[in-house]
Amino acid sequence: MTDIVSAHRTIDTGIASRPVIEISALRIGFGKHVLLEKADLCLHEGQLAVLMGPNGHGKTTFLRTILGLHPCMAGSVKILGRAAQLGRAGIGYLPQGRRVPVPQITALDHVKSAWRGDRLGPLNFSSTCHKDVMRALELVGAPGFAHRPMGFLSGGEKQRIFLAIALLAHPKILILDEPMTSVDAEGQQQIVSLLARLCRDLRLTILMSTHHLDPFRLTPHLALHLTQCRLEKADA
Image (cartoon, rainbow, N blue to C red):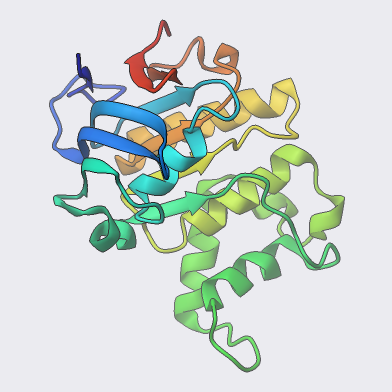
């Protein structure tokens, strides 16, 4: 039987909102190895969804499928009403295990470099770049340590900078793969509060994977569990 997981309310007001991620009868895997079968999911504007499951059961592959980076074996994924590959422009992505190649770079310059992307030549800190970068840093509460080298930041501070990068393009959806990695308990709680605020204030839809639901115990969220090829609503 297909597992239907759907929620139609924002996390703070209970007001109905439009769907931004729509998954129908999804099957994903590699070759003959199926990781997820007949999964349905509908996430709405302003919703926080937390994905759990054992290692190796397909959490990252599921998130990559939503991003359009992994093909569906069957079923469909729509992002903002379009096929996943076409809808990626509206998504900010934080991959698992993100690293900083140059620890000496300041947090500010690291975000500026991400704004530049693949453009060649010296970094042009234009007015548009400045506006986008400072907005992203403000959203994650990072201006206070923006001028410190990335190598001197705590795990929680680094994750805030990575979140700032994910927010640069003004996305409507955030896909976060294990953003709590290498973050202590206090930092995890701060990140959860930050994510809840982004959902509430910006009406962002956030889907993230994690191994621990405890930091979310006081924050409204949709808990999902991916195991044995099934996507089900878990006890939050």
